[in-house]
Image (cartoon, rainbow, N blue to C red; front, side, top):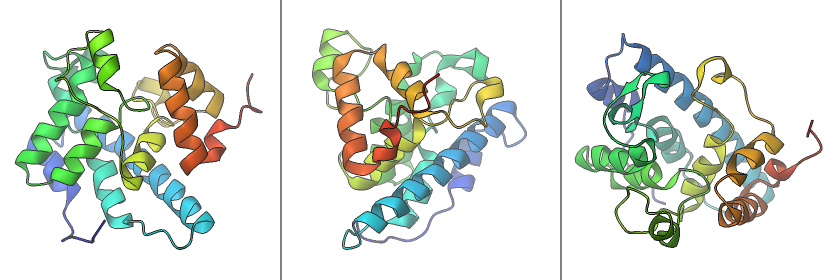
Length: 200
């Protein structure tokens, strides 16, 4: 991925959320934690594969913006008072970032949920999403998708990094295809996320 002009993710977030509001604080905190984890994963991958090109600038920007759509969703426990189903926040984020002239960042927003969502799952589960694939494709998309699973946006858990077995348990409720994709993503990018030695 070629380097492009640096953007200011905080300015974009502030266009769409009140910087004095609770939701902005939660969103920025979560996004900063995901950004830090994304960069760690990216550097770990680079150490293992030194010839691989990774756009660290893009990862930082896109990780900060990946959840920009949440405010339009119905999730009052995390200060989101919109109308849309929460699963739509990626699609909404895609629309927002496309309008901001950031199509590559928009794809990260759309493809980061779970371990990605396949078109077949959208159809089989009748999800309220446009009928297309929502699977991370680029290396940077995959890294941010993995990093996002390490942090919740809920209350006291906001700052706590999840243990790998907790991530696995959370994804398991979405079925075997989700788990298989997660395992394949982690094997490819960040095998540390498959460590279950910390299971309680």
